[in-house]
Image (cartoon, rainbow, N blue to C red; front, side, top):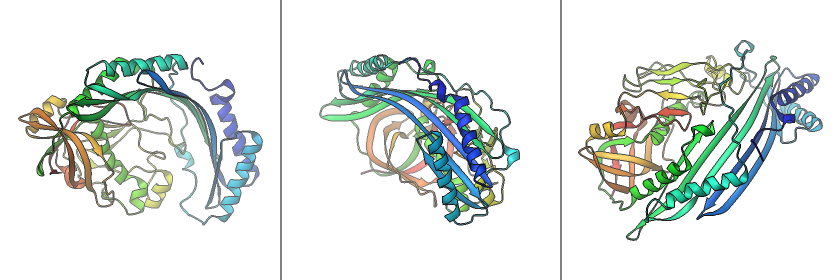
Length: 448
């Protein structure tokens, strides 16, 4: 199979040519504005379970999306067929749809002076020379490391090796056309531990743009096994109120609720617990959130947003104070503001720590709950009410004592954010939010 690269005929220049052709077709039909996005992805995934191949999948996906504006009326169409005839038909459909949609004075392209004028190289493209046989061998080795770690690891849900390379091109009638290629690679493993009739499951994974930055498959398997074993012998605890420490992989989701609440859609729909909160102090003074979209190899790095607007560094929270919202051009217009180059979402959010890692925060917590898994979707983004099923370990005198399960942690996010005691420097780099462990001084923990 060789390197997982898009065929030459669908490289960046070819996709840009398709964008230009579709825009020409839209102009010929008399639209006021138009934008086109084209993508091509090639991927390979191999899953092994109990030493045998369970699944092998190869993907080769392509598609084009076209949006046109007739005055303030918008129409969109998409197709996976990128032949000239199919594109002309899609443009025609988009124009027809636009003639039926309601007028929306906020609709339209982002302002022309906000377009990206130079597409920087963010080092996002690192194809993995991996054929099916090699992928299967890596998956088997990962699972074998987990199964061989301890005799109590009695079963497996499998290990998966996944790799993908995609090329993206976007253009609009402002004259902007840009493209870039990016890769994503992941190795994961999930196993079950068994002791004295108690069975627990856990997993671990590693993700990166560059396969050279992945953890070794053996270490991923061992980590999955270790996490499963740590859950054995879990107990129920009585309902109480105590400090809660979120691991880095969960802390990023805890912070992510802020981003959902300050997204433009939530603000203009008046459906956010942080409604009109710009300028308000929502965190302790030691907390900041920085957006850095140009981090080399960053998993959420982009040179421009979904509307072609040039991305840029900015601080969303400074000294605990919310500086602004996360806006596309449309939501910005609805709010009487300017786009923040966030059509498509936030990009590489960084929460600097004010404390060392897990051991330091466990000692600072003293007695409380270390949360290692959250269950369910009990977050009300309108009111900020937060209630999640949780699994973790109970901590006494700064030391982990025993695993716990069948509990719920609850509170209101406005209150919980204000009572963050510390953020660790043990950042999890496997996602778009880089955040360390977070210690919250007191949550309701519902148990037996």
